[in-house]
Length: 413
Image (cartoon, one colour):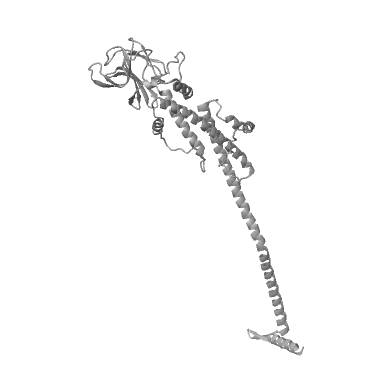
């Protein structure tokens, strides 16, 4: 205890030594004043200053401690705010995406309905009823038919909220309908392809030739802001199949399979022959049909009259463009009943038989030209019944260009 008392007494002495009585002499204008600052007063001032400093340090420490304690809360609040902002951004993006998908599906639905109406009218498509009636599809599966595998959708992310699933179901139905429409288009195109091939034409070459004549400025499918929606691979395949089918069917309709004159005789065939004037070997680019002067000359297929007049060696000529690169030429005529630009139907009279030009008597010289090159008309005029049946079916679908007016006979194919 003595050592502790000695230590305390030592510190008291050192502290007391800091506070001594002081007298300050102040002289002003010859007057001297004494200002006494006692040690007790100094100690009191020092104590008050120490208390103030201690209080300030305590407050500062409390504020710092509070900041340390609340920094975690503030960080948590900031994280929650950031998460909320990110969620709002995701929701906005999701809404934009759903709106874009809905617009795409609406465009696709409109295009599907337009294709269905244009090419099939009210005809049911293969397996279309099973798409529209799921119960019927289940019944078919129960009877032993293989049920179709559900289509996977590509437009909807499976992680999206449940309300987007309605769009996914709509897309699946559209994909199924597109597949059925594609199957029906391919079936029709296959029939037309066989018929065209039986007539001696190359279906692939016809499609390539038609595809080579396309163009125009690039206009995106949808011009609204943002990423333009695409119809998808299935729709691209369907568009290609429709183009092929239309080319082949229009070619069938354009093929001149109707008799150009109601006569029974054929006086000269296509190909090599002896020239009737010189007897020398010559190439005959058509068929010659002899008949009485003035016999009606009929359009062998629907088309547009593109020439009425005279050509060297042919005499009076009428030419009809049937589309798809097919043109028919009627020569040695005695008169015309059609004019340039007129749209004519198969079996419609366009001229009268005669013997103008390089001719030995009244007859019709009939040519068929494909892309400007003469081909043998016989294979078209002698088409088999099954080919003509496919052609009649295609003619009904192609439209007004191939329509037969009232009074035209079935023989004018």
